[in-house]
Length: 150
Image (cartoon, rainbow, N blue to C red):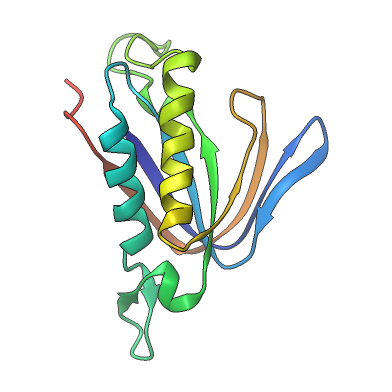
């Protein structure tokens, strides 16, 4: 599983022009699930996300986590994180888990974040979404759990 984490001042998701979720200070997390990923990876990825120290302290160093700043997560399913652009000009999505396999892992990721005490808003799994954000920094990190992609 992959999580593309962007530190944000605010972020929101709309579906069919209607806002369905949003957050203030925190992180926007785009979550990708690959074929063969397991539930344990979802929990581990959520714990890493919750504890990631990407917020500035009084000295300007990244040493504070979501809990330290009272930040929220906006979690959005993002199947294209496993798109392969290494050949030709059209991405291959062969590694992407189908929806019925990916949904339980995405849901587990969200539940594990909530169990860690993080406030979580979500997009709509499988929907075409308009995602808006004000990236703070910009600060963006890629986390991965499970076997690395070939």
